[in-house]
Amino acid sequence: MRRPTLAPLALLLLTAAFLRPLSAWAAPQIDSQYGPLPVFELHSGFWINLHHTLYQQAKQRRDTKGIPAGAPAAARRTKTEQLAWDAAVSYYVANYADKDLLFNTEMSLLKNQLGDFEGCDELSGVRQKTCDAGLPQKLTQILEAAAPGYRAHEWSDHDRANRRWIAQVAPLVREQGLGLSERLADIYQTRWPTEKIRVDVSAYANSQGAYTTLGPLRVVISSTDPRNQGSAALEILFHEASHGIAEPVQQAIIRECRQRDKAIPRDLWHALLFYTTGEVVKPVFAGQTIGSPDPQYTPYAVRERLYQRDWDDYLKLLTRFWQPYLDGRSTFDDAIARMVSAL
Ligand SMILES: [Zn+2]
Image 1 (spheres, protein in one colour):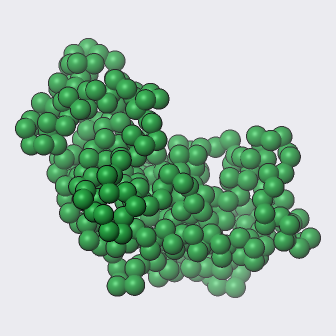
Image 2: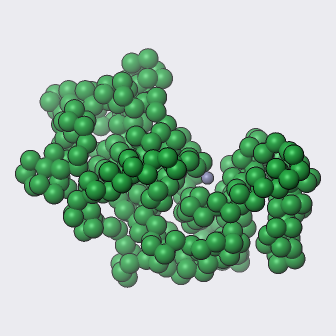
Image 3: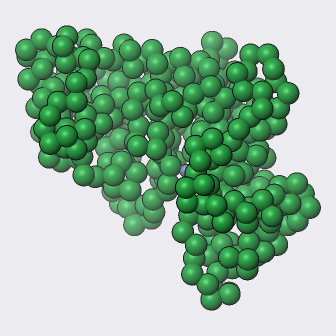
């Protein structure tokens, strides 16, 4: 859920952009039954789901020192499928399990590339030239070898969970998406991105259940994480997307701190993002008793006790100085200045 700095990576990103095939633009995006949604484009892609599943299992294997984590699919795989799967998990343990999905550039580029090739049933381009993803040869082999077993035993469950998650949030995005995006951009004194934000819905994401990478702005959300279900889905979408427009807040906090010779508070901007998205989303559910399991909407950070754990002081500052700004009783600059001077 945090945000990395990707500024020096323009060249790498440019390279990745050149590698993007024509098929990327015809990728199978999942929309609601009424056509494209505003603000977001929601995807359930095969390779990106395989990638996050392998990453997740590699971490488990690393943390349990090689003892299998007991994935239910293991019982159903053929011997060939199991060998390919074990080789893939081992490769991920050796190469990726220690790299952070969000902060590591290689992981971020790889994830984007696999998302772009969701319309392909191969990554090598052997059968179809436009399906050459340009990944390292060994990784291409590993993923292509693991794919049949994953497709046979796990993918349909994962894809179904992703589509269920999308179907549940889509009506709210259609109804409220544009208004929420305008409100958030207003609050952060910036513009919402003109292009729709790509969201890859995946059975597994990172340990936080969702993360957002920049340049290009892309979101990954876990469809099976209990924290992301029900009414929370809408808030998660907009919290993650807000990572792409929070720069003015971060800059304003830094500026105020420098003027006052204060240390820049770790994560105040992120607590502010959680607080703001929660408050902005709340009215959507207020008084909604039909079709919502959560008429008294509890924001994510309250429900998951993020404030109690680390951000108790931040919550006091936000309630006292940021809330008046959200209510139109203070300016952006005043709110930030007051928060920082009270630190
Ligand atoms: Zn976040």
